[in-house]
Image (tube, helix red, strand yellow):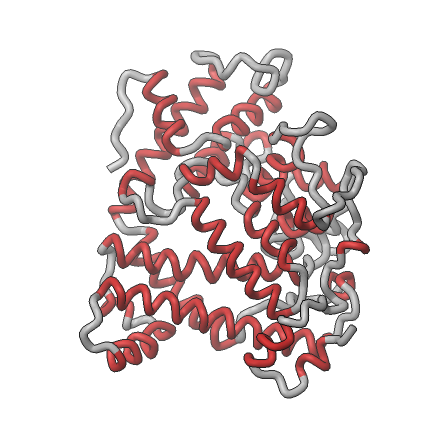
Length: 414
């Protein structure tokens, strides 16, 4: 099997397309036959690889369907065409597959990680996470990435033989290390304490919290950045929070906007925006591929574990693109994420979720009378996290309906 050095010789993006068509995975890819397997052994499928099964299991979950009614940036009632967590995850999956295909690693694994990466997000986007983190602060706090692991290892109950989805080690690794290593070699957290959910699970199924994840997982992580930067830009333009003239002040966008205007002087603003986003996604994807090929050529890993043992990620933006991407994020933060049209509903949503948690925790209202959600016999810490699990699994509209049920007044998210 040819290594990345052969692929990198005389590298250009046309060679990516040609090489990807051969179908052969690189030596540093995650190969199904060398997978570390599942926590609980299962018979292999005669028709699907382990990573294909993981992707399929993710798609068939309740958690995946609930993403359809969870906020990405705008609460759902504001416009039918704004992204939700579901459409965002599908877009991340498409970009992750494109990156994985170009780098000759397993597309199904990259897609599975991309599709599962937001399972732990509560309703109302990061507002819900802030509320649950405050309410659970005395018990260890709330982290949406750790919650994603809880969903796929415990909370989804679809199988007769086990809780969760019993996903492959490689898929769980990519989910847990979405932003890179969590600890150093001695087990100390790199960015503060490691969520207890991660530490507890890795006692039984060691996910190498100290290492970088696979190339496939890194593809999914960069795909997330590419997707939300560009699609938030698209949604912000659709919402009228800023104009194309405003966007032309962003260095990454300026040149492309000028090219589009020169080529299509009478193009409508809507089509102009779509053309900008399309071209920008392509530019960022091609930048990542070029940078990743260079890093892989330099480090010359022979196996997936060689990639994990490196001191840096191999799937990355170039330094120039990274700087431009930060400028785009700063623009979006100032002009979109903190815009009153976005912030007003978010602040109201925080109050709704805070009310729900307090009502359940105080005992003024009961959660569903099922074994899954019963609070009987639980200590205070366990009760708090059971309530947190319940609220984190809600969709935006379910949380609003539940608040209507329990309180005399539920404010409109406007």
